[in-house]
Length: 66
Image (cartoon, rainbow, N blue to C red; front, side, top):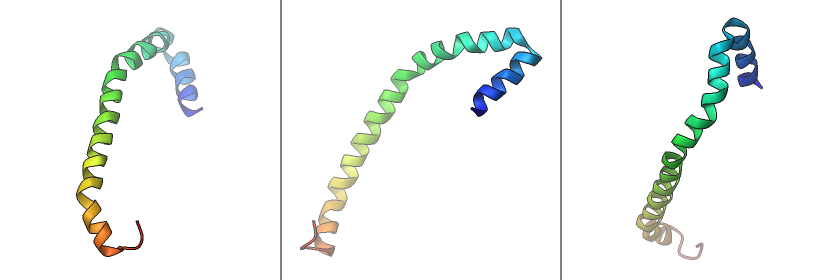
């Protein structure tokens, strides 16, 4: 809702820039989508590595609680 309010203020102040932002936002979102997907994949790989490294320590601290 806040972003819409800011866009309305921008539309009142400078309507060509507001219309350009309205058209350019989906294009920029599509261009940045592959980087977001790569970031999610890297986060998953790092999480698996972290869990693999810390698993022996977790098993030693609580052997009956897995």
